[in-house]
Length: 171
Image (cartoon, rainbow, N blue to C red):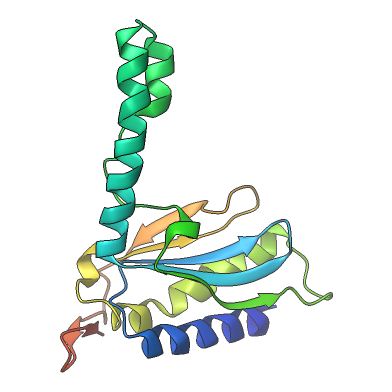
C-alpha cells in the first residue's frame, strides 16, 4: 500500500517541480467515487483569487439574507477568511493521478498511510515553496476529501529551512 502511495507522491513531486510553481497548499486527494489517488497543488496567487471570487459570490447572498432578516440563511454565506481548500480550483489538479490497485482497499489503515507518506515528504514539498512557514498540507480521509490539514513543524529537531538559489526553501 505505501509503495503505491509513494509512487503517486513521487510522480506528483516531479510534475510540480517541472511546472515550476511555488507551493502554498499541497493536498493528497483520494477520489472516493472513482477510487483514485492524486495530488492537488495551489499557489498563493491562485488561492487569493479563488477566495476573492468565492467571497464576491457569497456576499451577494449574505447581504440578501441579512436584508430580509434571515440570519440563519446569512450564516450559510459567510466569507472565506483564509485560503482556498477547493481542490478543483487549485493551480494544479489531479497531478500523478492513479487508480487504486485492486489489492489496495480504502480502509482506515490506507488513510493512515496517506498521512504518514505525506508527512515523510514534507521537506521535499517545502523545498518547492517560497514561503514554507505559510505552507499547508492537506489529506483526504475516510469521510471527506480534505479531512486533515497541518503546517510544517518548524520547531522539530533536524528541520532547518534552507533557501535554494531560486528562493525556494528546503531542509
